[in-house]
Image (cartoon, rainbow, N blue to C red; front, side, top):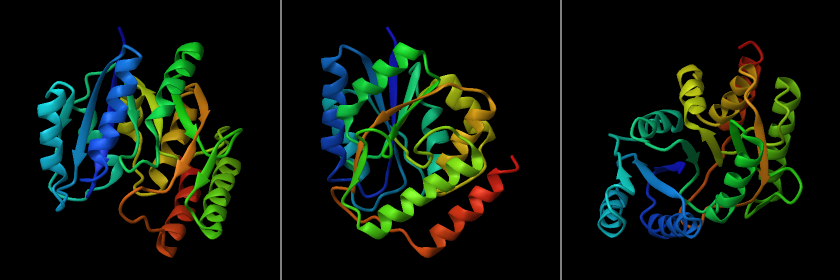
Length: 236
């Protein structure tokens, strides 16, 4: 039986972590699939790690793996850190703040099996996908950024910046050794390099919902950094 490892980077997710864990666990158990959740916490001051330890006592330390770090060191390095402990054949990356709902996991897994895809990504910008909880300005920025990247880089996918994805473990390991970008550009470079390797990519439409608890910010520095990132990836 295939095993699925879910990498959950966290920072101040004390309120979200128990609920997202329950939903992930229920989804896999109902599908009779082998699973584990790797919580990569960046020294959250709100007690996220203590909550993760409580979840270990409920689900078992073989199901909930807590891999803390010294501080906020970036999303890419969080995946690298968590991947070292992942024992699954497939690795799912998703946010712990309910931007990515576990209800889509069966669709990811089904599509991957049907097409033997190397990567399955959740898309906000195809078919029934959508974004909820953002103002018009942010929606336009995100949509424009994806169109720009897809056109310039020729990725052939509709959502290059989303972070709800399923990877074959060996594929993710290969890409993580090559990717150098940080921040918003990281996910985009993952797809650009996947195309260099001719990895197959499937898409599942998802409804992206802005985080349930906490704050999400997008500043001008992020936008400028993204544009520079797109240009830098043209020459990889």
